[in-house]
Amino acid sequence: MSLAVRVIPCLDVAAGRVVKGVRFQGLRDAGDPIELSRRYFEQGADEITFLDVKATVDNRDTMYDVVRETAEQVFIPLTVGGGVRTVDDVSRLLAHGADKIGVNSAAIARPQLIDEIARRFGAQVCVVSLDVTRDAGQPSGFVVTTHGGRERAGIDALAWAREAIERGAGELLVNSIDADGTKQGFDLELTGAIAAISTVPVIASGGAGALEHFAPPLSAGADAVLAASVFHNGELTVGEVKGALRDEGMMVR
Image (cartoon, rainbow, N blue to C red):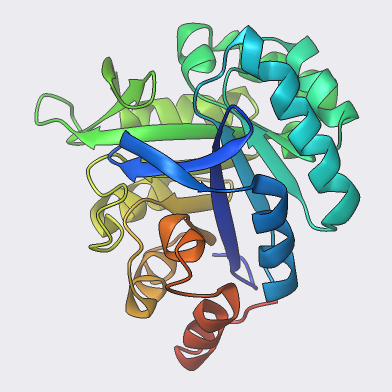
């Protein structure tokens, strides 16, 4: 684990609005992405992550506008993912103010995309996102999924994490489909398993619902924690989460 842990609000964006569901289903409106980003910046967020959950050609220009406007007002790193398929997509998002780019389904379909991004822009730009669910048929017990968790890729999650790192991923965003939106806590077994084999920072995602949920994945080896609905609904603030982590003896920024 790195010296100072990070707290990262995640904004799932569709057609210019923040949405949230449970296990990626039943999406409902959760607010304006620029307004929410500004709020989290003021609360002390270390980074902001945008995920375009309905990435289409029609939505793409809207997302570029959201990224640009946010970057003009929020002075912390922005990670943007969803629908990124080529280095040209990466280049355009960076030009609009993104600092890091998340790739998932496109990288599974064509792993060379990771190499291309890392080679052209540097590993620090490339965040490989893993949407993971339990699968007894895989050696690790976990399988990666695509298309917002709807399709199993048939690839062991730990094997894919290793390959992504070898190809140039600078960071892994590990989201538990099973825990996503449930507010029952992070999947600590998954987080610990990925962190144990990773040589790059690991962001734990999926399941945050209470202050006591944030320290365990960091103790399990994650470098950062990511959450959405608890922040969007006003149940917790970034500052409250950081305070709880300090109480657990963790260094926060």
